[in-house]
Length: 451
Ligand code: HEC
Ligand code: HEC
Image (tube, rainbow, N blue to C red; front, side, top):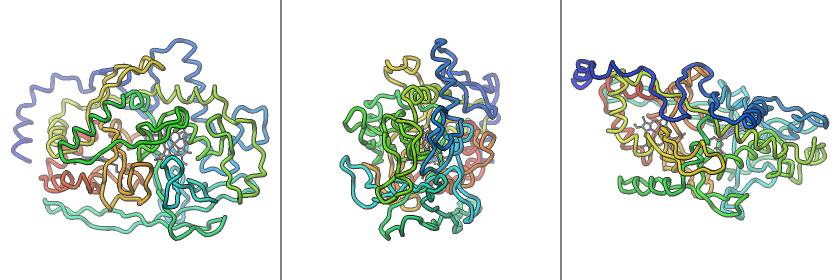
């Protein structure tokens, strides 16, 4: 045990008095560590809103059905799609996982596609046939587009204390592409469905705050920057916040994008089914309605996701957790994983205004090195850049999602591996983590588990 940790243990009396569950600091922090902790809805709601929010929850959990079924509110799946419900990739509002073997299809993961170049707004250039995402499934009569299989190559990394950790490097192969071979220069990015709680808070952080975080980072020698993406509703570029490269402008556009891209459900933001010109059977398949998702339904899902609370930290009086929290700052993790932010004014939904949140993200994209690169740029996010993911609630993943796969493609099988994959701008932090005495390394992980 490090001298420092034993000092801490001796000085414990200072902290035992504190509650073991953190006091909720805002209406969005909820003292719940159960399997429902990612699914708690902000309680201060007018009656009219509470009906809407439960409708939104129903739509998020719903398995959608194939048209024609005109009178059914939940018809519209396909013709091409990845999964039949939002929940399949965001189980219990938490995170999905990669397939367990190369034979298994992706169940809670998808693969973004593009060609080198940019679309008219500077975003990724979709493949003319396959589009911007490989849809693995199709309704009867419409072949799914194919699948991506995942295998792993192990690489060992030695830590300063002599321990060796094996890291799994994913190797992807396109299997049975149904609409012609994919070109050799195809850019692709396999991504696991991330957790979806707390996103209203992230949306309510104002742009100025995000820009200031980038400037603070520059002073510390980092190159994190906001992504600037096309906002189809406001018809201009804004700071992107959603998606793993901060590649989407607003929560509403993220949701409408998921409905069309992941489930083949049209909405006022995406009026056309997700079929390219040469996908004839897809083109001919009937739609349920025009659009399949009404604006009222879209707004209900938006309200639901905006109002999902965040689990409060646990064991914050534990000496090891406190030690880990200190180390988290000392070795530079907080330079990107910003512990505390406040929201600005959010007139659309005032409960989100002026809230203090503990997301452990700066909402910026950072160069994470070649090891994590997907080589697929998305607006200003380069091929090795990723949005700092929020770490709130990460300590409950194992309980709620019954796995511990982390990072954008789930390659890390636990938190230690996730940290060891950090490179690029985070290389210095990663090196310091490797150099920690075992007890301090464990303390840092214990801190992550308290989030
Ligand atoms: C096939 C799996 C899959 C399905 C189905 C799916 N998602 Fe996702 N979701 C993802 C992935 C992967 C991402 C990250 C996307 C990216 O980086 O561009 C994501 C991102 C999101 C985000 C942004 C999270 C963040 O932290 O920025 C929201 C919100 C979201 N999805 C909502 C939905 C909704 C609503 C539905 C149902 C209409 C849905 N998703 C269906 C896989 C899925
Ligand atoms: C330069 C910015 C930066 C620094 C410094 C940094 N991180 Fe990260 N972190 C990221 C980004 C970006 C990702 C997402 C990478 C990916 O998914 O490929 C990430 C991912 C993670 C994840 C996995 C999260 C998830 O949802 O899967 C954990 C855990 C984590 N970081 C912990 C740490 C710790 C501990 C440190 C300090 C040793 C640290 N990070 C330092 C930017 C940073």
